[in-house]
Image (cartoon, rainbow, N blue to C red; front, side, top):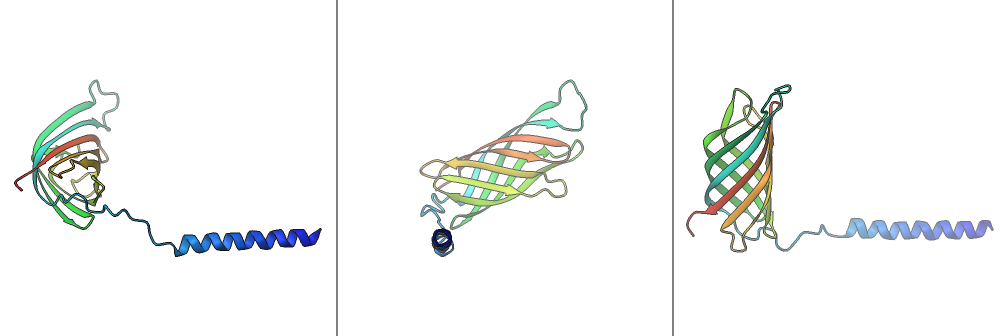
Length: 163
């Protein structure tokens, strides 16, 4: 009976070793569509936001709306992105401060993109995700921006400037 247990243990060990070999030896799976479509260049569009003042305890109207036109510059290297957003009007970051320039980094591939920025001085933490048109001439991004005082639900719609 003990022989059966030893054989079973050996078989189980071999199966685990083979599975581990496949896991560690397999190359990292990446889509062949990294960087598709090319979205680098100048963009214009609109940002709209619904935000809440998290500091107001039981305020009658804690929900506010914000809208601004914006311009964007996107730099793309392969699937990696660097996005600079410049708003015409400053986005409220706290109840007393606002910011109009955001510098995000992220990725693009398979007609989807994402970008984020860590919180800093007068800059909220921001995370965006969205999609591009098949030709790469329109982008739609949705996400959140949050500071210690305000939380934004953001929608950005962009159109590429020129060819």
